[in-house]
Image: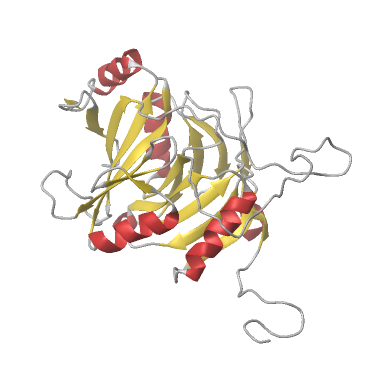
Length: 308
C-alpha cells in the first residue's frame, strides 16, 4: 500500500467567504474558485455545506467531508481498491480516483498523487563549530515576508474508538504507528513517506467525531513564527504556540479557523523508517512540547508594547 500522504482535504463549510479568506491569509494559493494549494500542489477544497457534490457529513456535523490520499502509482491504487472491496463498497469516480468509508465513517479518497517534487532550500542557519549554511552577506530574515506553505503535512481526527481506528489504518492500509500517547491516540505514517506522522487520533466522545486540526509543512521555524505572527496581526486567534513538539520534533503554531477546526503551521518534522521503535508517553503538557512561547505585540526597550 504505497500511500504517500494526504493530497487534499475537502470541506463543506458554513461561511465560504471567510474560509477562502483564511486560506489566502494562511498562505495558500487559489488554483480555481474552490481549491487552494501549497507549493507542491496539495491543498484544500472549500465548498458550501449544502453543495450537492459533497459526501454526506458525519452525524457530528464536522465540516471535513473527505480526506484524499495520494498514492505512488496505479498499482497501489488497484491494491487499495482490492483490499477495501473485501468488506465495503468502493466507488471508482470519473477522475479515476476511488472512494470508500473507513471503519469509523470518515470518507476517504485515494488517487495517484498530484503532489509535485520540490527542489527548494530549507531554512539555513549559521552556528559556531559548524560550516556556515548561509553564505557571507546573505541575510536570514526579511520584513518583506510572504508565507509559502510547501506541502500538506497531516490531519488529526477526533474519534470515539482509537483501537478500531488504528487497526483499520494499520491492518487494511499499511500505516505504521511511530509513537503513542497512552489512552489518547497513535501517531501514524503510511508506507510511502518517512514523515513521523501524517495521521493522528485523539479519543473523544462520539458527538465530537471529526477533524481536530490539519497543517502544512513550512521551510523552517522562522517561517512558522513569521507566518503565525502575520495571522495574529490580521486578527486571527492563536490557539497553541509557537513551540516545538517532542513526538515528531516539529515546530508548531495552531490557530482557530472558520473550518470548524484548528489549523497549524509546522516545520522540521522527524523522519523514521521501519527500524524505528515506537515510544509511548502519558498525554500532558510535559510530553506535548519541549517549550511553548507566547505571542505579544512588538516592542522595543524603553517602554511597554505599543508605547514610545
